[in-house]
Structure formats: C-alpha cells, structure tokens
Amino acid sequence: MTRGGSTAIAGNNMRSRWVIVGLAGVAASGALVVAAGAFQSKPTGPSARPWAPGIHAPVEAMNRLAPDPATPAEAVAEVRDFAERSGGSAASATLTLRTLRDDLGPRAGTIHAFSPDGLTVCLMHWRFGSTCPSAPSTPTPGLLFMVSGGYPAWARADGIAVPSALVGIAADNVRSVTFIEDGVARPAEIRNNAFYLPVKEGPADHPWDELRVEYDTGATASVRVPAGR
Amino acid sequence: MRVRTHDSPRRHRLKLLVLVGIAALAIPAVAGAWAQYYAVTQWFGPGGVETSGSNYDINYNYTAFTSQVGTDFMRLNLCPTTGGCYPYKDCYNDCSDPRTISYGYAKCTAYLYNTYSINVNSCYVRNIYG
Image (tube, rainbow over the protein chains, first blue to last red):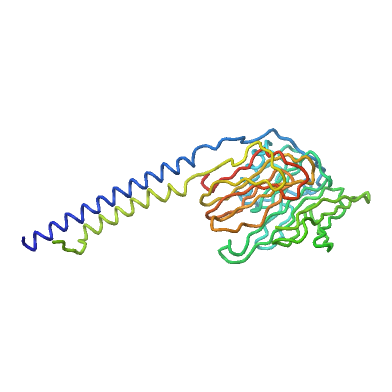
C-alpha cells in the first residue's frame, strides 16, 4: 500500500470518528434538552392565595414620602411579584411603593414600604426579601419585621460577607424597638418608620433572643427571635 | 497500519463546528427556566424541613404559611450542593428571599423551637430564567 493510500484511509477514519463524536454530542445534548424540559414544566401548586392581611397599623412615612424615582425597575418588579403571589394587587403595590431608608451601607440594600391593598403596609428589604403581615395574630402589633439572611464570604465574588439583619417597619404608635441579643440591649434607630440592625451569625448556645417594643402609651410587648443563624 | 495525521484547516473547522454545536445545544438546556413548588399545603412540625431540587442561578425563594401563634415562624435559605448553607432568613409572615446562588437548592424550615406546627401554604423556588 502506498503512503498516499495510508493517509487517505487514516483521513477517512478520522472523519468517521468525528462524525460519531458529533452525533454522540448531539444525542447527549438532546438528552439534556429533554431532561431540562422536565424541569421547565409548569410547577404545580398555588400561584397565590386569597389576600389575607394580618395585624397592621398606620405608617406615617407612607403618606409623607413621595415615590422614589431612583427605585430600580427590578425592585418594582419584586414588589409587584410579591403582591400578586400573596393575593394582593400589583398595581396598588406599585403606586404605594416608597423608599423609607437608603442609608444602610453599600451592600445592605434599602428598605421600602408598599401596600398591596391600599391599607396594609408591607416591607421590602431590597435584594434581601419582602414580607407582608399575614399572620392572624402577633404579640407585637404595629411591628412588621423579618431577619434578612445575609451572604457568607464564600458565596460572594468579592469575598466580603453581607451581614444578616433585623429589618422592620414600626407603626406610628411605636415609640422604640430594642433587640436583646445575648442579654445585651441594642436599641434600633427608627427613621421614616423603618429600622435596621445587623445581627450575630452562626450557631448560638441559646435558642432565643428577644425583640422588645415600647408603645406611645408606655405599654411594652416582646417577641422571641431565634438566636442561631 | 494506522497513521496519525495533522488536521487540515478544513477538518479543524469541522471539529470546531461540532464543538460549538454541542455547546450551543447543551448550555441553554442545562441553564434553562426552572421553578418548583417544593411544599404545598402541608403541616411543618418544629424542625420540619423541605428542600427543592438543585439547579442553576436560583434567585427567588418564597413561603406562604399560617402559624397558630404569632411567635412561630418559618426559615428560608439557599444551599450549594457542595455543602454549607447561607444564613437563615426568618419569616413571621409570608415572605420572599431573592438572594442568589449559582448552583444549589432552596430550603424551607420550621424553626426547631417553634411551639406548634405551622400550616404551610407553599414553598416555592425559581431561577433567574424562570
């Protein structure tokens, strides 16, 4: 067999091999498409439940503050989505959206209020979540809050952790909010009815800390807050 | 006798085309739109947990629930499949968690020290394409 003949045969072999590799690749991709298609099927479950506001109270800053033109479009979308998912009105949530705090540091987001029914005040901690008063009872009426989980350093491209924080809206009749963490009282600064307090992270040797509220009347109330993150 | 030959420019282009074709088909398939209700109308006793499937670019976790007392609450977080989780987000009312994770799963938990079971309407997760 001539050298030229060997080359031609080798070339044909290589071409065949690549055709097989290509077909296998396309087949594998097809399998992935099918697999992904299964995940992309519409999830079953409730998209929303009837709007059922829980305990809520007036928040003066909602009436005093004007809409914030600097509110990111994604934040508006989040509020609309949350209102609809909770069974409220996306239009009402958008119309009533206000920025209560924007002084929370470069990664700590902003605090917004919105109302999915024109009356109930909900809270959005931008990039960290939203909540609406849906609980039928609360030991601290007039206080809407959540513990916004942050990011550990390993989850951030810049390697800088974002702290978890106690974030909330205090109604007009709330005089002060104090977080008792590891037995130490930490008063929250309430501005525009909103407050923000970074909290300790990691496991704790006790299950509960405490959030204490004092009302204009002098009455006090408190709610347990988990100590371990 | 097998002779290994160098790629001709034409064959090289063919290989590139095949590889690009595979990549074009595979990447959107893996990183596709995805959403899941991973808990629907069920009771979560203290410490009860449900987790979603794993996927890419998760950026929304949500729970709606009714607690029997206002002091009980639900926790949300995201976890990479390699282990460890983000800090919990604690919700005393319906709430969302739009934190992001490049690949992992979502978790919906009733706090271990809750007093009663919580009636969870839904725990829902989706990714940025969903």
